Length: 317
Image (cartoon, rainbow, N blue to C red):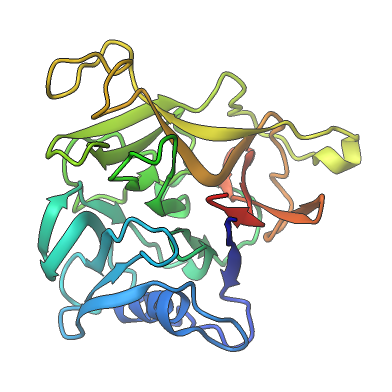
C-alpha cells in the first residue's frame, strides 16, 4: 500500500507566506509543511532533527516508520544572513551528527531566488516531496528564459527498482555539475535542459557515489505552444521518469553499470513525475490540475511549453 500524496500551496487558508522572500520564511514553510502542519492540513510526517535559528539552518529526516530511508536533508541560507531573496542551499546525506556534519554526503545544490518569487508549492509524502518556488508577478504556466523561475526539484527517496537499494535518497533536478554548487542559481526539473540529474550514494551501501545524468526523452519539446490538450481533443501519454545511467560507465569496482549492484543502470522512478508527449498550456494560468481516474495530475510551470506532470494519489505503491 502506497503513501498518500498531499498538495500544499501558498494560496491555502492559513498557509505561511513569502512576504519578503527571506531564508527564515522559507524555513518556516518547510517546518510547517514537513513537521507541524497549518490550517486544516496535516504535515507530511518528516522530523526536524537540527536547527540553528541564528544561522538560518535546518535539517530534516524522512519517516523510517513509513518505509523511508531515514536520510537527512539540510536547507540553509547561502550567506548566513536573512536577506530577502537569498540563494538557499540544499544538501543530503545518509545521516548527520550535527548541522553541516554529514555521513556519506551528496553534492550541495543551490536554489536561487528572484524578487518575483513570492509563492511556493510543495507536493509530497513522508518519504519525498517536490519543492517548487513560484513567480507571482504572472501566473502564466510558460515562463521566460530565466533559471530563477524554474526551480522545481524532488527531494527524498526515489521509487527504487529493488528492495536491496540501501540509498534511494536524492535531489533530482537538471543540474549536471559533478561537484557542490553553492553560488549559482541551480537548475530545476522544469528548466528546458534535455537531461535530468540525481547524485546518489551506492545502492549497496558502500562509499562510492555517482551522478546519474539521463535523457528526458525523444518527445521533449522546446517549442512555444499555447493550446491545451483538452480543447484539441488530444490524449496525454504520460511517461514515467526513470533514473538511468550509462552503458559505458563502470562502478568503483570496475564493473559495468549494466551489471553493477553498486550503481545499477536503471535505479528507479522519480515518484509521481511524468513527461507527457503533449507540450502546451503556455498561456494558461497556474495552477493547472488535471483530474483523470479520480487522481489529480499537477502541471509544472516551465520554460517554453510545459509538459512535466506530477501524479498525486499515492507513491511508493
